[in-house]
Length: 250
Image (cartoon, rainbow, N blue to C red; front, side, top):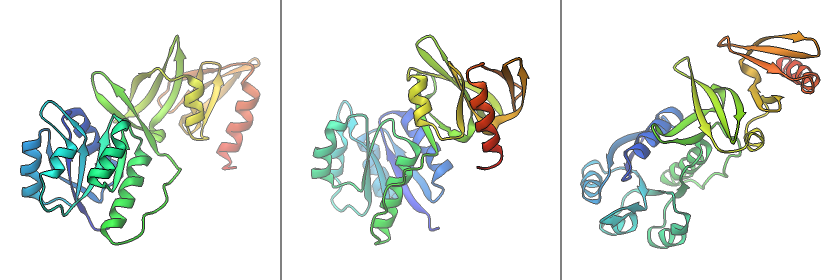
């Protein structure tokens, strides 16, 4: 696939790093040729790099916003994708900029991929594709690490503790943990079918299970990382049925 040049304009460095990582991982046909955190550097970068796509944050305090910035580009030869944490700017930005796409932070991987597909189709003179409903991952905001992108295939398990849920996942073949204040029920509903509740406070990625044993009417399973999780008595029959069907590809 032909590569398309892109520039990221956002006043938050963490947001730039997150989006750059998402593009490298999930959209290799997009090449980031420049980034900017201010209006001045954005205008210089757009003029210098002539990107085909500009990811534009609406709010860029204290001196400017994305709409003002675009108005200062006399001849716009690129498609604009709005990225913002403030959905109230949608109507204003659509009327002023007529963007190719609109992403509300924190946006999911499949939302980014869908917007980019439509944008690339527009650049190629094709009709926009319908949005895919199949998700491949999600984003969680972390105070220290910014917006963390996690693929479902990397998640080991999720465990509820007090008022939060700890998501344990693999990063560079090492277990990492991140906390969210979403309920375990919400996470269970959002995650793909390969995730199964094995305890009132735990859901597991069945693809990461290496073996399990019966302990009376309950059980214990071992993950590919040698971590262990308890299977409750009430969940054991459903686990055995669902896991057997999963392994058989049913």
